[in-house]
Image 1 (spheres, rainbow, N blue to C red):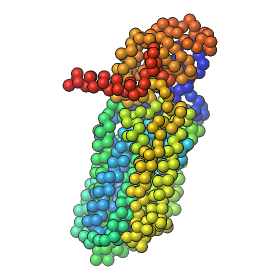
Image 2 (spheres, rainbow, N blue to C red):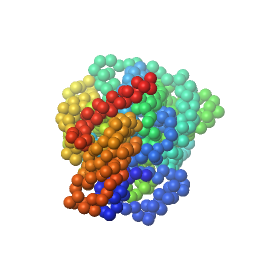
Image 3 (cartoon, helix red, strand yellow):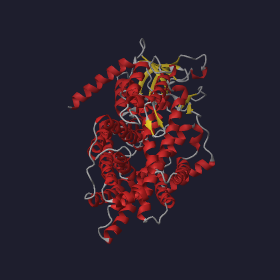
Image 4 (cartoon, helix red, strand yellow):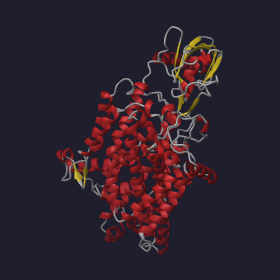
Length: 625
């Protein structure tokens, strides 16, 4: 396996430059305990990888369809239903305005994680490692802390929503704390084993959940009522506040989406990964949130038993009430369905547990020596303790958490995607330096924009415990109107694109010469472009500068698809520093140690190279047609 980050050291007696490179010592050496943990993980079938980049030779033939199943399954649970439930109960909306808001804002929100999931196959990097190329080394660590809190918070929310139904399935005799522990145990075991087990579980678990939800909808349909839709500024305020909750639920996936696609081949089309992810998110969230809104309408049903069930056992009691007063056998079926629905929360909690372990390793290099599964175990204990403490406040926790997610995640995603589409189209990321802070940009423009946009979101928010001045100024209701995510998204894009330098924000990351490191050949398209271009230079004299400042001139004899170069008639231009290389006549140079390549009389400009390789690609495409 190729080391993820390499540095060049002065050449010794050996003449093979590939052997003159050593892995950079960016993290502590693995201990015996760490090696034993990885060996044990391999034995039991758990995932060994942490946040390390997954190189192409370690990828699998995983189908993009798995993205549909994992995101669809992860949303087939009670927390999704509870999000739709907030429309009538927390924001006072009717059926049709809840229906339209759920459709419209999910269509917008789902596009964001569907875009970030594409980083996985193309770069082999987890989602929260990509911001290092935009925000820089230290700000990206702060974002990783936010993501860590998010993962912990989502685990709490999903555990509470599942436990509420499981508690009612026990007819109130199964304490909430025990329900939480049962769901947490199932989820933690699955998340502990990692990516492979998670995909297998997600491929099938949603089937049972969907059947249970359809049965619930069938029995509840006769009780659902069409709550009248409001009008005027008050109605607009309620819809916009509900939209923040929906967007917060959607964009929370953006910070972990690529974690579930890093093992896919980089040849997979962007459009394919986007569409499968987008479809999985929409199919799960829209259908189940609509059912949640319908169940929420039971709170205003004239039959007092629904209100009594809600007051005594919350959303779990309301779900169970649709099976009552029909037949004892139906109520028994209802208990079974509630048990399955409660345990369905495990599907989404596993994603939180899995990503929580990865988030810990992104905070500090020192934490890399601790296997991901150990952090997942620590995170599981933490979220279970918090969930037990907050077990009586599901709706308040859910509402507040969803809105807070939107406040920081929306501006973060806006900046990240603006960087990608405006400045790094074609995946122009140097994946070889993902863990080398000296080679990463400073990220001043991105960081300042994110902080300013998040502050703008905070002063535009409307929460029970804080109403920002902008939200108050808009009016619409006594609590103001929450337009935080809209203002944050607009400001992030405008401020960042206006202030980001055209070149990378770190002089280390902006060589004036052409870099031919595997970074720029990190995608199948880029590999073909650079490879096809350099093949045209065969048997020509080129000058190569390595990352340790050695300059070498020679005749290019061959170059492979990894941009490893073989030179004949070698002339080392720095013999004063490296006299032992005077007798070297041919060399094999690994692409990852090359800083730039020059033709005899002119530098190869990156733009010119891209133009030439595009023409080559166009010619090949024409021949294929």
